[in-house]
Image (tube, rainbow, N blue to C red; front, top):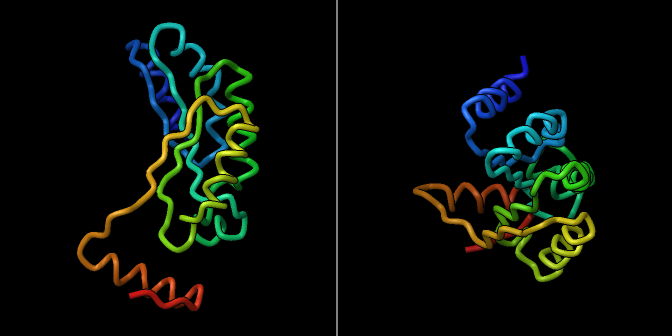
Amino acid sequence: MKYTRHALELINVYEFGVAIATKSALVTRNVDVLQDIKTHSPTIVKITITTADDVLAKQVEPHVSSLSERFDTLRVLLARGIYCGVLMMPILPWLGDTEENIAEILRRAKGAGAKFVYPALGITFRQGNREYYYKKLDEERQLTFL
């Protein structure tokens, strides 16, 4: 149906800027509209990266573009003149909050040419979310935290 493309076309017609946060490589199919928007207004794309581990990424982010596809998306957008970088969030406690993981995300972001990294190195839990998260950690990773 191309809802995103149509929304971007309307944003362009009314000369607004746009900030996109996505985990999908499909953003590249709208690069022509993003280039048009860029001629009159700020345009930024933030590619979400939560871990540098492909296996973990598939577990916590099923049904989204792979890490390599997301880093390739950065390269494609940058080559077409779109300002973009990495939205490093959420970094999940006990899964992605290691120095090694953060360093690898930064290394890969730099290698892809990212113009920025926007980190959010923690999460908050609403009522019941902490218990749910810990339960899922126990089930999926056989870990226990309290």
